[in-house]
Image (cartoon, rainbow, N blue to C red; front, side, top):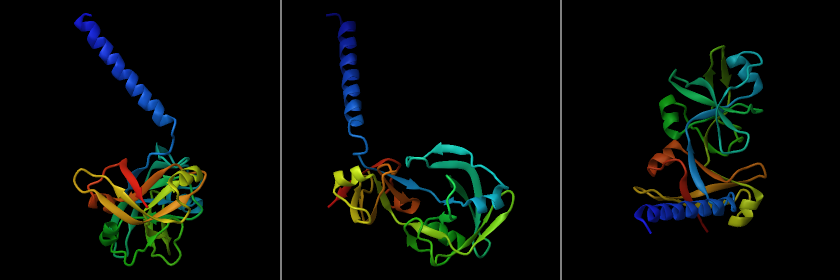
Length: 220
């Protein structure tokens, strides 16, 4: 066999192997757990978006997120702390029933917003507020600023596969070349509309020198 034919044969074998591995992964959707980190962002209500961007304004999709139907919009706001300190913040869609602002602990120091609690998304009762400023106006929130509790989204099928239940607190190892670490108190959130994914914030990612799509292992 000529050298050119040998090379061609080896290349084809490699390509076939890659295709087989790809099909194998596709045959087990949602069974490999990855962790992604989120920068500061907010969810806005219809009423507040009208105030910030104008009556009837529609969010413009910047990119889809892993969770079905959710997206990062092109629209940005300015979050203002009690002393006038500011940070830019992106709106995530779609529109929610209640406006919620998710920041990191470092952001809370920069904005001088005191006592920002770590909460599950949607649990904003008794949390601090802030001012959000858009191109058409501003909204003063009496509450709604949180640090998001680290969590994993599971479908019911994923939850069964990993042996977890909704609201379980899990221990998870995240792999990093420099600073692999183990997170405890990781909240399990189970819903048919979810896609398997772990979420942490920027501070938590920086602590482990973690990038996006970091391999995660649930430790029983």
